[in-house]
Amino acid sequence: MNIAVLCSGSGTNLQAIIDSVRNGYIPAKIALVVSDEGRAYALERASNAGIETLILNAKDFKSREDFDKEIVKNLKKRNVELVVLAGFMRLMSPYFVKVYKNRIMNIHPALLPAFKGTHGIKDALDYGVKVTGPTVHFVDEKLDHGPIILQKAIEVKDDDTEETLLERVHKEEHVIYPEAIKLFVERRLEIEGRRVRIV
Ligand code: GRF
Image (cartoon, rainbow, N blue to C red; front, side, top):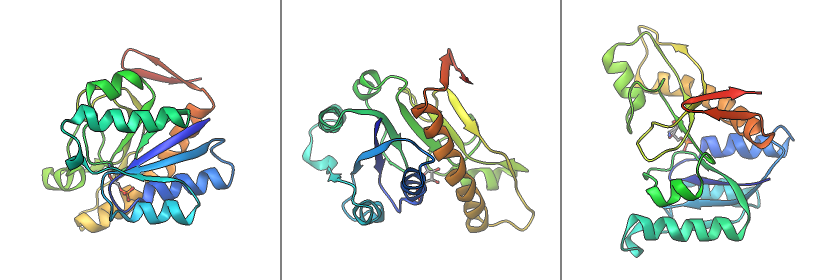
């Protein structure tokens, strides 16, 4: 199966996925890495692994849908069956979600439906929750909303800072994201309504 990873930043999750493909844990090929940010370190990680990259600047497109159409065109050209968002800082258009329905995954650094949005770690810490952790979910039209595939709870410690908590959340992300992708590639995920069953 061909998969694509979309990133905007440092790409530590991309690296975990690259490593999991390389060691055979995920039986798939990363056919393309797309970034909307030319300086994203994720691009270097992809190049180092010999993976094709594509940089698209949102400013070059007149709408979100036009931008997404360009991505979809490139994904189709490479027979991509699963789209993996790994720190991709853009909301997908309804067009993209429809074309790749139940075939787009995202990872969020909090236990959804808590702390949606771009500051999942800081928001959890500021709220004072005692337990938090990453969520892998399918993507629908709403922000951080689609059916949940995997979650991992970790304890928040009294002396945690954003940095220390981020480090522990990331460590778990790098375990559950490859796991969720593996399950999808092996066609072991069944979706019924909001519920995702592992078969
Ligand atoms: C992760 O914390 C993920 O939960 C969020 O964006 C971050 C991406 O980090 N969606 P990286 O670029 O994979 O290091």
